[in-house]
Image 1 (cartoon, rainbow, N blue to C red):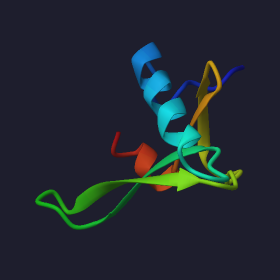
Image 2: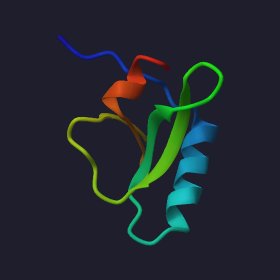
Image 3: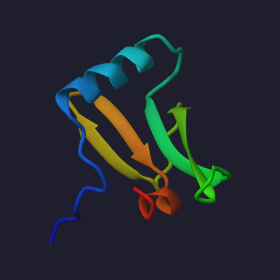
Image 4: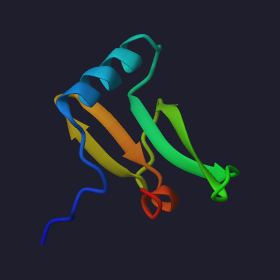
Length: 76
């Protein structure tokens, strides 16, 4: 049985991820995470990925790579 996608990526989002990655040396994709803070107790983080973490969920569309930290998946 296949896994469900934590998020989906639109064509426009994939274009933007590829643009961001293309301007950064050694970048492979972006990672969505969370940290403590904000009015609800958590803030989202977006970081460049230079080496994928096998524990992250991986979403790929047309060469654009987005990784989601396991702890962030519950808040998306």
